[in-house]
Image (cartoon, rainbow, N blue to C red; front, side):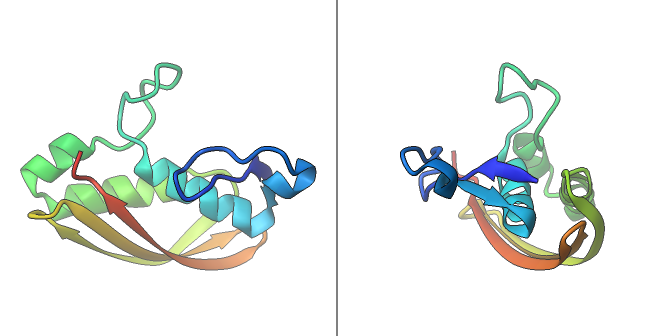
Amino acid sequence: MKTRAIDINRDWLFGKGRNNYLSDSNAVAQSIATRLRSFLGDAFFAQTQGIDWFNLLGAKDQTAVSLAVSTTILNTDGVTGLSSFNFNLDSDTREFKLTYEVNTIYGDLDSQINIDLGV
């Protein structure tokens, strides 16, 4: 698996040829993070992709958030299983912190992601 790398502002990197691409578990990790940051219906070419963050945060339903996050992770290309995940959702600051361990076609991967949902 290969994917174009993104910078800290989540813009694609250009100008360094093959060095602007991620492969193997790094590509899977970036794909998971990108998919978790996607809002439902936010991309004109993928209206059914993303998480319905607006309604999930408004309802404050931890089970629904857990289901949406785990489904998104498990449906990411290269992921074969979800070993564990833990999240903290701060309703006041609208910050979502997630740590997870997944099994991928390249081996095990553990990571942490912070998403500022204060849009």
